[in-house]
Length: 244
Ligand code: FPP
Image (cartoon, rainbow, N blue to C red; front, side, top):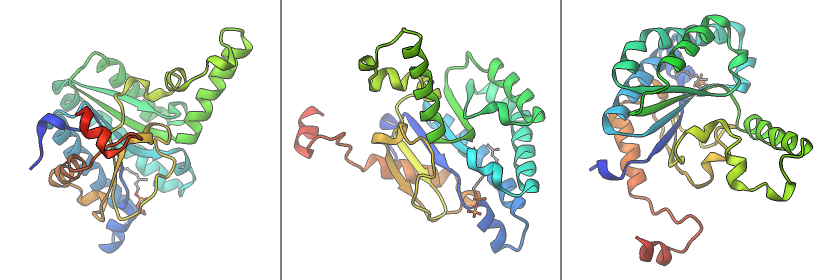
């Protein structure tokens, strides 16, 4: 049974398998993405109801721009529809919407409603929903390194003062709690440039379920598995038990 008192604070999901879901049914890939957007709705609602503090969804990677033009366009339209249609759900449930990634690359028809909802939901405190859009973990680390280098050149920072703490403060994920659980669907077991820094001590949960079939029950299963893990953070098992 899932324990609501020891939930992962921050869950991140690599929503993989939309294309295969569609292919198995003889449907165009975009139908898989459409069904995937329904799964997003269900998982956001379930996370909020459980009391998860933050949920990050890998909706569009920096590398996804290289997919066929029609697929990129369709994904952008699904994102716009999500932001427009879920506005009431997000506001009524006091969810704060944020993004990580290069928002400037998004087309205006996505960026505009997205930015309005980000601003309008900024004071909401029950859960943070973070959409990774045009996001890459390496890109994000490089951007942080560049900002610190600029601070050094400006004379505001000494190189020897750079540490894990102030580096993390340069990442767009600084507004999110520590990442506890990364879920990847569809049987693939890799990180694909997602939250490379943030996943340092996260638990990983891989499932064969394709993203469009991922449900509230699948989320509960992932959290239950997480709760059965022993997290050692570099310590020994004995040390961890003494500290508990
Ligand atoms: C990976 O599956 C999925 C994506 C690249 C896009 C994820 C997008 C959604 C779930 C829908 C829109 C998002 C929101 C937030 C409304 P794939 O296409 O790579 O699947 P495959 O590996 O089976 O081909």
